[in-house]
Structure formats: C-alpha cells, structure tokens
Image (cartoon, helix red, strand yellow):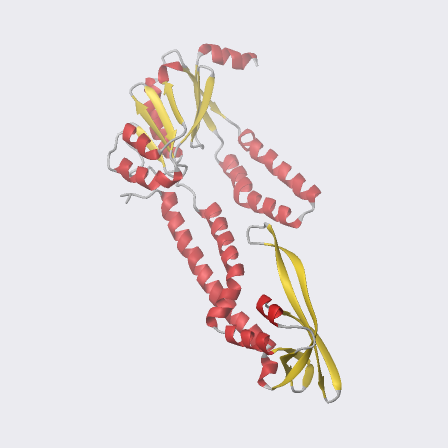
Length: 363
C-alpha cells in the first residue's frame, strides 16, 4: 500500500464515498416510491373475482431496444388476448406474458383471470397478478429502481470528480517528489533526472498503485520503469535542449530538442516549479533567459475565444443535451479560467538558443 496519497487521490476517495451514499439513499427512496406506485396499481386486487377466460389470441412480436450502453438489441415479446363474461357483459384484454406461458397456452383454452369486483374492465391473468404481488417487496422494488439510480449515481460521481478532484496547485505533496524525480500519479507519469538527462515514462493504470508504493519506498528509476510496464519512454539530453518554456500558472514544461518537442506534465504547478529549479542549472550556457508578463486581456484571450466558440455551437445546434453539456463545461472550466487569467495574468519564462530567439523575432 502507498504510504502517502496525493491531494487528488484524497479528494477522489471522499467523492467515491459521497457518490455511494447518494446511490444508497436514492435507491432506498426510489424503492419506497416504487412500492407506493405498485400498491396503487394493485389496490384493485384487494376486492377481486376470479373467472375462467377464453384465449382468443396469441402473438409474438420482435421488439428493438437499447441496453444501458446504448447498443441496439432485439427481444421477442409475447402477448395473450383473452375474453370473459360478467353479468352477460363481454370483456376483452391483451396482456404481456412469459415465453413459458406462451408455449403452454393454445387458442380456445381457458386461463384464470382476476378482475376488480366493482370494475371488471380492470383485469389481468392470475399468473401476472401473483407475479406482481410477490415482487412488490423491498428487494423487488429496489431491483426495479437500480437501472435508474445506478447510472444517475455514476453521472453524479463523474460530475463531482470533474469539479472537485483537482490537484492542489500550491502543495508540494510528500511522497511524490525527490530531489531528482517527480511522480504525477493523477496522470500516471514519472519524470526524473538521470545524470545530465531528463527521462520520463508513462505508467500502466493497473500498475499505478504498485509504482506509487515502490516510489515512496525508494525504488530506483530502472526498477520503477520495469514495474510500470511503460509503453512510452523519453530520454532528453539536457545539453541538446534548444528551448524550454514554463508558464507560472501551468503544470507543464514545454521542451524542444533536436527535431522533437515534448510537453512534460507534473502533479501540479508547485511540483513543476520544484523540478524546474533542479533542471535549469543543468541547461546549456548557450540558452538565453527571457521573461514575458502577459497583459490581463492577453492572458485571458484563448479562454475567451473558446467561450465564444462554445456559445456559437450551442446557439446554432439547438440541441438540448448538447447545450446543457456546453453550459456545464463553460461554467466549471472555461469561465473560471477566464477569471483566473484576468486576476493573475500569465508570466512566461523561457530559455532559448540565440538562433531560436532570432527566428521568433523574424516571424
């Protein structure tokens, strides 16, 4: 077991607990509602009569439906049509029955039917009524609401995760950094200094907990890489870096070397700053340092453009669920980013070769 958990992992555990409590409470409340609904539907059975009805029709229909994953499926639905007389008045009804009953019944045979004493037009087969009565208990009603409360609770969990499970931007969490390495367990990524090289590799999701525990117990980079079952590995010689860029409000370092470029992500902005302090002294002396302080409007412009695009899509699409989704994203992501950029404009630090700086000026 890992000795320490990241801020995101701690918040995720609380979100999981809250989502589970919501699921339990919703399922319980839903079962009570379903029981009340079923009691109302079956109230007529308290005063009923039984009659032998004549089978007048047996039908099987192919029905299309979508499962919980939205995939199209087919099933056969069986129907029984019957007729009976009460006080010389004829009543007819068609009800859904099981495949077994469909196989057992034939035309012009008799089937037991319950009907309301005061209103014979309310009726059903004895098998259907007994099945409904036997399933109208706590377990049966809970099972009935699970297809609704389950997906709803998962959606609430996803929303809460989206909003609340964020890394603390100012924390330097114990157990997720050393003087030469930085573990981003939220994104399953590890960055480390190996001599004068910067190495990084991803971590298989199934191995994340084991890598986290091994890292916090002092495992070497080679051991961690073997445990991680990584399929993406990079080694960047620091002496070959042509450009390194860091925005103070971002957890990403952008690096160009040779003919390649890489965005190196860290657990949060503070962890990135800690890494940058160790990487910067190892950079080539040929790199020139530059600092750019963006204006408030300049820092917020990308987010403002994104907000304008989303607004245009929502306006012209006129699709409710799409508009709701866009509104949600704008509310919890885009608008807060605009406010943050206006309040705390981006400060960009960069280390570039003289020729890179000249190319940028020419462009």
